[in-house]
Amino acid sequence: MALKYKLKSREEIPAEHASLYVERDGAFYADIEGVTDKTKADEMRNHNIELRKQIEERDARFDGIDPDEFRRLVEEKRKLELQAQGHKPEEIEKIVVDRVKGLKADWDKQLATVTTERDSLNTRLTAIQIDQGVITAATKRGLRPTAIPDITARARTVFKLVNGAPRAFEADGQTVRYGKDGVTPMTLEEWVDAQTSDAPHLFESNAGGGAAGNPAGGGTGSNRSVKNPFRKESWNLTEQMKLQKTDPQLAARLKAAA
Image 1 (cartoon, rainbow, N blue to C red):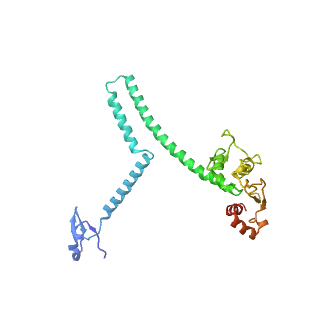
Image 2 (image 1 turned 60 degrees about the vertical axis):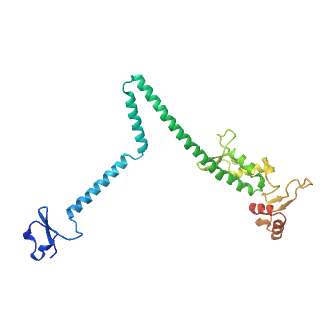
């Protein structure tokens, strides 16, 4: 027969187990180490559930409230009440207005800090999204390495980030600049294509269009066009090796343009 933990009277205790029971709170309990009264265990469990519920209700009630800010406002209120004692209504109003001005100055200062941080992040994001996009597209068209600062500066006057993507605008900064189809906004690639005509000095002569030329200023004033040996339709391993030996930079640009 299983040993019962709690008995109401001494008579219920089996004789052979009499030494195992102790009297407590008007009943007899088995004196066993590690055993907890189920009633007390249930009480503790229910208490913990109720306590957890109260904590969740409290957290929900104060969600979004800054305790430090709340304490500061309470302190301001207390000071205002103390100052208001013995003052006329118009004096009290002036005290309140002055206090509000002080608080507004603090808020404006915090807002300015946040705005500065936001603008800094936007500038960094612009450098990543616009500068790198323009450099990638222009390099395929033979951009001179020394022209990178120039073309990125030009791009920043045209493109702005809209929902995280570059978008071209007219000089007023408000009107969207459209591409060749006149319907969709101009892409970085279309803008770079236009720069090869509007600012040809930024690019190597005839580079990126399937042909490449020697840089201007060779002494004769004429440009020698050659096929791009890295393109599929004009693949020429001998010319590739020759270019890589005589003009590694041009070879790299032609390979990127291919």
